[in-house]
Length: 382
Image (cartoon, rainbow, N blue to C red; front, side):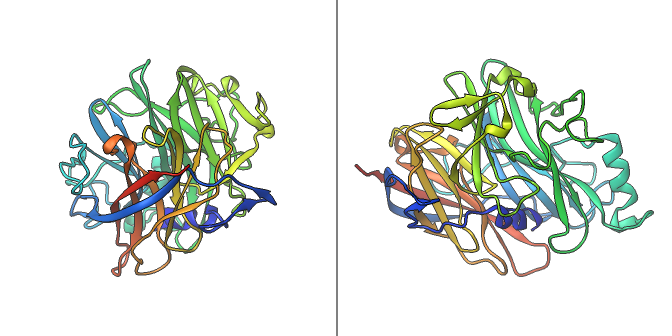
């Protein structure tokens, strides 16, 4: 899957057990893994061959899941067999025996609908280059909207959906991110609204708030103490950049870049994105959330070219973040590596002593994959 390739490009170079980064000794993790249990796959529409991603949040009483590239069979109502995102939701928040009760908005053909609206320009370009009815070469060329984290603004009673705009073409590794932004979403029956930035940060893409060489903001996000904290792990223009930078902003002003500040290290926050310092090395897809049982923040993400799912802990969003600890080894994929590992905090049980993690892996048939569901029980480590 394409977004899985992206995950591996931006993944951490430091495998479980690493004691430091850049020559710095890191604190020991604030947890030990007691046991794990594979609880099966995340349910999906039978017309979906495969999809990845799977960020989620509790929004208006439902766990809402956002996915990246979604392969379909047969073609959907507009004759596409690949759409750049899809979504589903469930009101069953008990994940201890697996996940159930998912529903998906559908198009006229019964295929899953996209969550992020394409612009008129993007939709026209994708239709003209659609491989199933190509009218303009290069066939299969497309603009993709890849969702990342979703977080709820409790004051505004809306969700914020972070996303990346990607220029993609057929072939392995034949894509690149243009930049990142955040859409507002008033409710499940509405369509998210992409911002309009003036003057544009990225020429020809007036919705983007951050450009090609800036942090990939939206890798993880949460609201704490009335502020929205957003991690940007890596940059679209550099596959060797593994650092996770941290920003914060009033959730009501999330689409106003001028209101954002960035953690610059040593307890300092700056209004300049260029001052943003890496607080830990992670992955472009990950989760960061407060754990009530541990009384620590926990980061969960996939390892680099391995089957390991890794964790770190910290007393504050900016750190100091601990060394990595391996949560578990994921089931081997048919090809490539597992990716997209992250936590779904709305399903926490036993006060957060058991957390639930999803990850993506490829299957044997072309364009097929699955998202798996794993329970991880931890203990406090003094």
